[in-house]
Structure formats: structure tokens, C-alpha cells
Length: 283
Image (tube, rainbow, N blue to C red; front, side, top):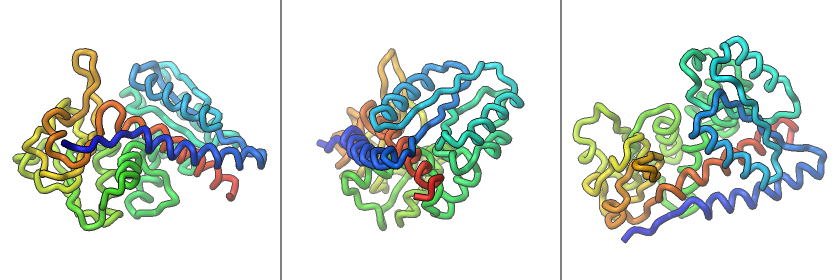
């Protein structure tokens, strides 16, 4: 039987540390503020927004939501973004993605101020991630994966780590982060032949493919660590990319869905906001 490694203890530890950091900032008359930019009202965006706002308030961060109409023009969107870039009271900006198709992310990503880009939208922060430059802001979900591994004392150096999924949001960034921690990396995707065979060598397996219960028992090596990043809904129930009931008896450690990686992500968002606030105030 696997040890189920939940996200809440990780999130709670980060939150406790941030509460003290924010107290120190507020004592210096510095008030950390997060700007959330949401286009339309997609349910997944709203759910994440509720979690982020709640986490920020608990820590002492001021959240501000800019809700924009789903048919906003690209010109008007950029105008709103530039206002936040220029607002010195705002220390971090989170833009919910994907944006509607008529908004060109390849253009917009160059508009966000990299110093306020706390979820790695800007190519500047993507480049810093590639370089292993800790002054940047990596994506929050991959960073949550790394925080979980470190919290539960999972050895990364020299281990074989396999990621299923190659998105710019999770797959590629988490591969870079694991590589920067001296793991040996393999990335599997839709064109990989015999994925189960390719993943069975993994000491650490990260599932981020967006397919419910995709990872079966034969994908997993005995005694491995399985991190499930997927969030899928089947018949009204949330499940991950890993078939938990099959895999739990084979992996040594496994994250559940829900109450796994997702519960850490908003804490990482807050951590990045506090980091940005300190950098902007030369602290």
C-alpha cells in the first residue's frame, strides 16, 4: 500500500511562513497586492479564483479581481494590462489562461511586466526557468510539484524522472525544474510509442496529460513516487490522470486528486507574490 502524500500539510507550511513575512512587510507600511485578470466567467477560472482570493486574505495579501468581458478586444485587454503594470500598488499579476481565441497570447505575453508576472507568462520568466535563474517566477503548478517532493523528502538527484505531457504550463516546466535538481529526464506525449514501457523505469512519475485515469498499474515501477497533476471530471466527480485505485498498491508515494497538487498551487501563487513585492521594494 502506498503512502498517500496530501497537499494540505505542504500548503499549510508555506502559508504559515508567508503570514509572518507579510506581517513584517505591513509593519514597514508595505501592503502586498495581487491583481487577478479574468476574461469571462469560466467555471474552472472561478474555482481557482475563489481559492486564490481565500488564500491571499488568510495570509494578509490584498487580492483585486479585474473581470473583463469575454468579447473584449485585444487592444482594450492590453490597455487594462498596462494599467496594472503601471500601478505601483500592484505587486503581482495573474492572467487566467487560456484566453479566448481572439486574444493572441503570443502578443500579450510580451506586454506583462516580468517583475509582476508571478505565473510565468512572460518569455523573460520562461527564459529564467530555462537558465535555472531563481530570480524569475516559474509556473505555480510545476513549482507546487517540486514543493511536494521536497516536503516529503523525496530524493531527486540522480533519479529517473518521467513526465507524461509536454505542455508549456506543466510538462515542460516541471521537466526543467527536475533537471535543474539533477534528475535524469524523460518526457512522454501522444506520439510516444508504448508509453507504459517508457514510464516503468521512472523513480518519479509526473502525470500531466489531461486524460482521466490514463496511468494504469503497468505504467508504474514498484516503489516509485507518483505525482498526479491532472484534474478531470467524470460524472460530476473529480479525478486525476492516474488510476488511483490501481496504482496505489504499487507506488511507494502517491498524491491524491483532489487534495493533492492543486491544493498547493494557490500557496505558491502567494509565495511568488510576496517575493515580487520584496523585489520591487528592494528587500
